[in-house]
Each structure stands twice: as structure tokens, then as C-alpha cells.
Image 1 (cartoon, rainbow, N blue to C red):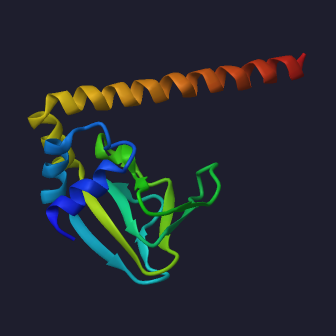
Image 2: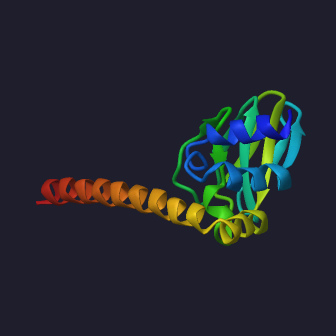
Amino acid sequence: MSLEDDIAFFERVPTFAMLGKQALRILAIGAETKQLASGAVLFYAGELADGGYVVQEGSLLLEPGTFSEGKEFIAGPGTLVGELALLTDMVCPATALAKEPTKVIRISRSLFRKMLEGYPEAAVKLREIMTARLDVWTRELGAVQRKMDKNGK
């Protein structure tokens, strides 16, 4: 794929869509493409994460680790895996296995941070995206808490 194709692909990834073409150009230039055979492990639960992956072709099976409460999840084309690892140190909560021949684009945390430093308007947009998500999660948790309180009395 060409650089312009990679930028266009990133524009279809929900977290990246609002960052702007120039910011995405930086990501596309610095990102690494990795090809996985069917059944190959991209990363294991419990490993330190130093970036995120966007599934470009194929799919990944995300299996929760020992200490994770989550369920299995299939990540297909356009899915960003490890979003929080783009911003902060963290441990992978799941093991990622290629369900079929799969191509991913790896974006390191250092590349992502440099892009945000160079394009502060992208950082503002990302903060707005994260804030909106946090608001939704807070409301959802509040609804769950109210149900639990109601059922517990």
C-alpha cells in the first residue's frame, strides 16, 4: 500500500479519524507493518505493551488473560488494539492470536506521542474523544450501580 492508502486507512479507524491528515501522515510514515500467519501470537496477556496495533487485513482473537474479567473478542480490519498503550505504560490484558493470515500496523507509543507533540490540535481532539467515552462509561457504571443498589435492598 502507498503512503496515501495508509493515511486513508487510518482515517477509517474511529480513534484516528478526527486527528487530521497531517497527524495521520506522521503515523503512516513511522508505523511498522507486521504479517502474521494463522495461529501466530502477536502478544501475550501479561506482557508490557509499548504501543498499539491496527488490524489491516485478517483478524485477531483476543483471549482474556488470567486476571482479566473480559470475554473473547474478534478484532477485524480497522480495529485498534491496545489503544491505551499508545498513551501510557500498561500490561496486555489479553493474548492476541491471528485467526487467519493477518496484517497489522504497529504504532509505537513514542511515535504516537511525537505526533501529538507536533500536532497539538490532534491532542486536543483525542482528549475530547477520550472525555466523551469516559462520560459514557461513567453513566453506564452509574446505571449498573443503581440496579445493584435496587436489587440489594
